Image (cartoon, rainbow, N blue to C red; front, side):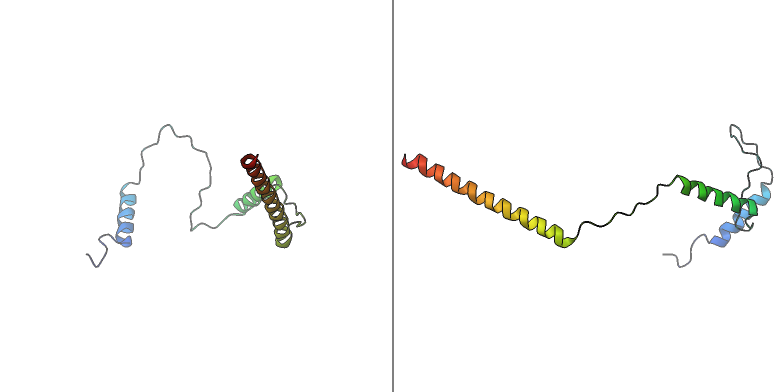
Amino acid sequence: MARKPLVTRSSLRQHRQGQESQNTETPPVRNVTRIPNKARLTRKQPLTQEVVQEREEKKVKKNFYRKEKTVKPLTKSRSVENQKSRELNGFLMGSIVVVSLLIVVVMLATFFL
């Protein structure tokens, strides 16, 4: 294994700068629609006041169409849900007992009658 990287970032940067200096003229690109006077910002350029205002306007437009959150009062709680489940379990267990007793009665009636 190599202890140092084969290509370093600085060598890539130097290579890229060398290519940019050699290729000062770029061939025209065809079949591409370009928007004239579109501001392209780089990291070095500060934001102009117009760009800041455009971003604020976009934020306002986004918030304008956003649905407002409605706060509903809480009606559920763990204790209420647990109580409901206990009641349902009691009802189901009672119905299972009744049905099993009816099945036993029907089986006894069929065997002894």
